[in-house]
Every structure is written in structure tokens, then in C-alpha cells.
Length: 436
Image: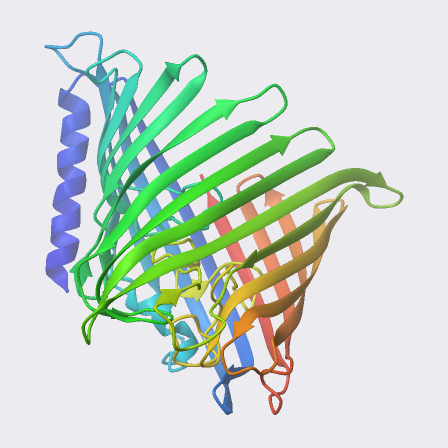
């Protein structure tokens, strides 16, 4: 256990030495800490329900040396950054036995509080050409809303080129990442383009996700597979109104473990809007609406998988899920595990419809948030119900300052027809978060 700590200490010492000797203009330090005490009650898994108390600590600290001059390319400069992450259950927490948290925990290099490297990168400005910025190494990255690709507190190892004004006002990113999953590295590569319109920002992207190892997908037991994702996003932010819409198409092929092949043909979209308005007594308030869905498989026996399912879409935060609903943690294609399937849904059920309506009501330094969610499956290969659950969340957030918040949440998850014998699941948690 001492060796990782020694290696990290040595890396920090080397970084600080570089800052002193490389004519750097600035050393930036950043820190982000969340300490949470939570109690999950009656979580559904198969025909059983169980409770899980959870005390978690999620902390990150970053060191970035900025403005290092490159002597042989005087017009260029670089930043060197290291970000350390520590995620653990805390010394006073019980053992985490609930299978609902297994995916979030198993993806982590360390889940016992031992620090690991979330980011280690070199960022070069004016790389080869004045309008190109290159970043090499492990880095945080999210594509669009994160529906198809996000780093989720782990960083993505690889490289990225940001090309400004490739054509008129169009900005382009090209990327190649080698993320790790379970026991192997995958390849993720492609690009995205941004076009700033007069009243909003358009973003289009296309990338490949290549997995050369065996895995169980929603439909296929694949020996290897290649998925292609093409997406379009429009984002608008004004004083009173904001809108964020994204649609994605999934295509590709798979080699099946038993021989033969299969195809992927799926799609998903998410539309989100918010309206800011002064309300008597509360003052400046916000109302949110969101609707999204993804495709699913109409039947189990098919040579085409129509369930939308990217491998690295954003959906985790520390040891828990993040997404729609404090308990459900839903994306457009999976949610907190209620079974051992890849998407957490009952066998044969795939695709999700998500509806959310919510509001933020401020009172002095306190913000009261209320959200209502409805989750419905897109397809049930067994011909049964599509009704998954509803959930409501109430959150109170108190700001001691811009960088220190105290949060409390009460959430109730009500299983519907797909879980006829299940009772309500509940979550109560308190958390303190600080950053600088």
C-alpha cells in the first residue's frame, strides 16, 4: 500500500521541481472534496430488497504548471498537469455488499481511499500550427451531454487536438483514447465540430468504439465488436431560457462468440429546457423540463441489436451512479441495477424513456429543489409491461460561500409493473462539498 503513495509523492515533487526550473509563469492548485453520509433502503434486486448505509469520501487535488516556454518553438508554450483522485467508503462505513454499487466500484483503480492518478497530461499551445492546441495523456473529457462518452472521474488516456477556426468560425476536436474496461483496453477515436450560430451553439460528432475482447452486450454474446456513434447537439443559453438537445445514432457490427456476426442499429435523444423567472417570496427561480428516450430490442432472437448502449457514456460519480434520479441514476439506456443484466433492467427489457420536471426555489442562502421522474422501458422482448418506476427527489442546499455547500436529499423510488411485488425504495443523505 505504501508504494503507490511513494510514486505519487515522487510525481508531485518532480512536478514542483519542474515549476521552479522551467520558466513557468503560474502554478495553479485546485481541490474538490465531497463527504457524504447516505442510507439506501429497500433497493430492488431481482425478487429481493435490501438496504445499504454508505459513508463515502470523494476528493481530488490538481497541480497545473502553466505557461512553460518551449525554447526551440518560441511561439509555443505548454501546461503540465497532474490530478489525483481518492474515492473510498470511509473508515466508519459498513462493507458495501449491495450489488447496485458493484459497477461503480469495480471500474475504480482503488476504492479504499488510496489515491490514484485521474489526470496526467501535457497541453501544448500552438502545436504545429498557431490554431492547434494538443493535449496528450490522461485527461477529463465529455462529449456533448455525455450521453455517448464521458470520463467519469477516471480520465481518458490518449490524445486530443483542438483546431480553432478550421473553416470560418468552426472549431474541431479530434481525439483518440484507450480507456480500460474490466480486463482490457478499448479504442475510442473520432472527432467533433462546433459551429456558433447567432443564437446558440451547434455540435456534430462521429466516433468509433472498438472492443477486441469478449463481452456480453444487451443482445449479443460478442467475441469482438465495433460500434459507431453519430450525434448532433444544439445548446442555447439566454437570460431567462436555456435549451440543450442532443440526438445520437448507433451503428456497427459484432463477431459472435458462437460464430457468425450481428449488427447494431439504435438511436437515442435527450431534450432539456429550463426557464428562469422571479417568483413572489422566493425570488429568482428555475423550472426544468426534460424528455429523452433510446431504442430497444423488440425480440430476443435477432441478428440486429436495436438497443442503444455505449460503453463509456457518463453515468458514475465516485462509488455511486449519477443521472436522472438520486436513486435511479438513470441514463437513456441503463439505471441502478435491479438485476444482473448489462443495463440493470429485468431480462429482455431494453431502452429507456425518461421524463423529468423540476424546480429550484431559493430562499436567502438556501435553495430548495424538487424533481419528479418517470421511467419507462422502450421494449420488452417478453411482451410484458414497460412501466419501470417513478421517483421524486427533494434537495436542500445551503451555501456558506461560493466554494462551500451543505446538501441534504430525500428521495423515494416507486417500482411499477415490472416489479409487481417490490415496495418503495428510499434514500436519505447529507453531504458537504468544498472546492477552491
